[in-house]
Image (cartoon, rainbow, N blue to C red; front, side):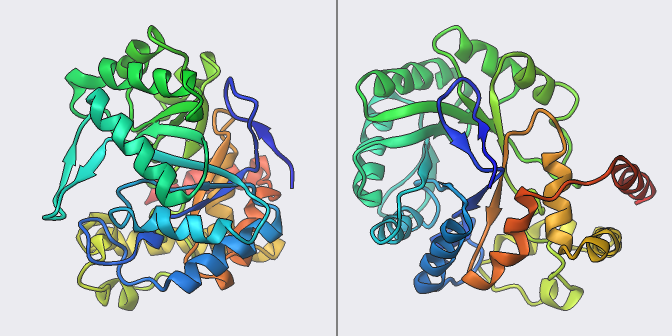
Length: 316
């Protein structure tokens, strides 16, 4: 599988990486419903066997559980790059809070290293720029962790241009992790051009819009999400948007069928066609899903297919 340099780092990453959000399991504020750890580990192993060389997780996913699961998966495979995040914290009441204070980030880093059972984090990211007034303190601490050898590279997630400009004055940003898909395109006008101009790598999350563009979503499935599946409350999974979004999936399916690809692979390939994007984070909940998405790393849409999809988006 080909690789691409991630921003200013020496990390050469495959175009798709394993997203471990759903691997956090159920029972927390942004869960995807119940998840079997054995399935999660099998998905990671299958992806690495296919050549995928990075995993993206976060401390808050499952309130530490995703990191623990990733750590277990790493014990029996050649180690891929491990990316994780700080800033979202929680207490005994399991309520999620926000902190970019130095002491908090230092504690969070040690906790992530312990849960992942690794000596150094390949890419450590600020999950959200919140509270905004503490962004400078948080980014200064991230640079401190890099200088101390706790993390190899530092990045941001969900930052706007102004916040990245502030951070850049303190220390270079290796990467940005924004939401980007055919249905979520707010970063196209300013954020992606800024990253390209300043050699900031981009690893987009939710390229299939939380599974909506995977080809496996139906109205029935959306209506029967688990009670703790956060997607129940997303407008894209509710009418009138749901029907229009599923119509878009049929355009993806038609293109994919010509190439022996899934709708999800077409959706991911659309994201990767943007020259500012280095890689896409792809959620995988079991080994069977790997074949349906990993191929997007090599699949390329033609200019005619990209134009056809643009027309479909404009008509939606």
